[in-house]
Image (tube, rainbow, N blue to C red):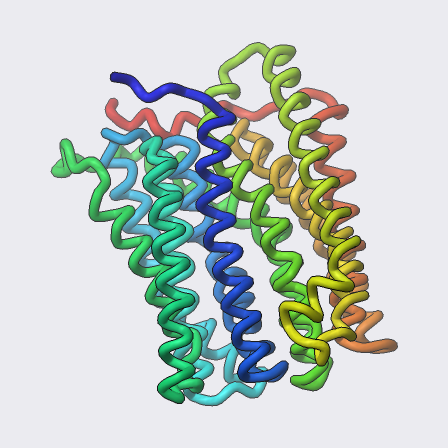
Length: 414
């Protein structure tokens, strides 16, 4: 029986899975902060921020391509994507280790940052493979299983005194998820390979989608790097707590957007009026959801943050509240950027998000130099993401319709 095609059902499963991992990561950081202190929390969040930032250079876009254009029986396409991801992991891991060393981390920090980069890249690509095959429920189940497993293993590591390798449980959880995603995909026709034309279109999509992702997601992850570079470890730990509390909210939008990617691919062939009407309806729903979620977090954070992380983290409250502006703008920007990339307007998306990121980075550096790194990170992230949201929203909802050639990356059978 054919799987029922429901954006709502798929979005719910995707949301459950991503929230499970997001909440697991939130709990992970809360446990580290409670038991090991602000400096350890800053180290953990910095490694994760670098890993996510580096994954944007190829693996995340490859996962988006798998989600948007792959089919459960199209193994040639998935293998072409996987090959590119595996090739990218070596230089990305090396850069991750180098960044950890440059900001003052020791050998353990460098190794774990490199491993986190590989693990997160594999995880995000594995999610794309699950979604491209329509396996939203399976992805959600493994998100829950690996998230719970990582938390349990973390307690074990702390009890055994292995605090220098505190990221290993999370790394293993991501790798288990990716292994299941790749090992259980449909292997029919596995001896075939993608044609040259499909490979060219695939590379074009990934390159431009990577640039757009860096310009959008990179600003939020880069804020942690700025806080670590301009602040003491203790103050950077305060910002890390604020960013950790904001992360689950932003992951809601990313979950919904990832669930919508296959539909964006199909909508690209619809008449302009019908396509725009569907996008506008989706924008309203997501906008209301994210505005409500961001406002709710801003209201409860004065009680929740000290409760979760401890009273020593009370200075992080205004930082977390300020970040909610950036989180809302980021969430909507990711949605708009994904749509533009899928309908052949990736260059426009990249250009507009690049403007927003340039504003954000410049603001971060100026404010960090006059105030503190954490304040600069909050103000810069908010300014950059608001600019990106305004520009991308105009391009999708108001601006002239000048869509590029419709990507048909999944059509590789020839």
